[in-house]
Length: 111
Image 1: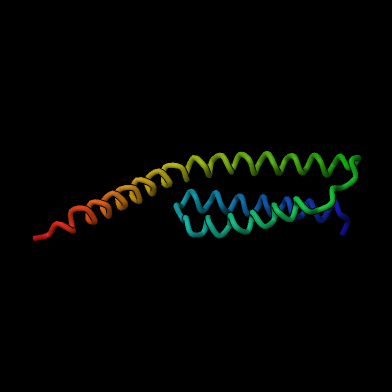
Image 2: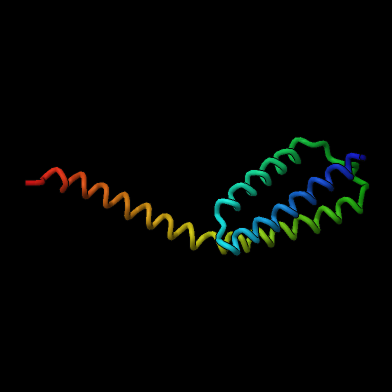
């Protein structure tokens, strides 16, 4: 398999993972989303260390751009779905932290 084909296969795998991540986010399956995100991050790191194909490979560049645009659009939708959940989680953690602090302060004053 040529370097272009190998890299394109990696981009395609990232695209597939991105679609799965979007599906997980749409179903509020945060555990699955987290696992998929780790796999995707590993593939992206692999791309960073891979050798780039020849500059004249127009079909590679065009397909790569298509995939990147798709992944970016899915990423934006994932963020839109995750941000409200993250805000809710932060509020819960914050209220739990405040409750813990109150118990520490007022719990020590038991009669």
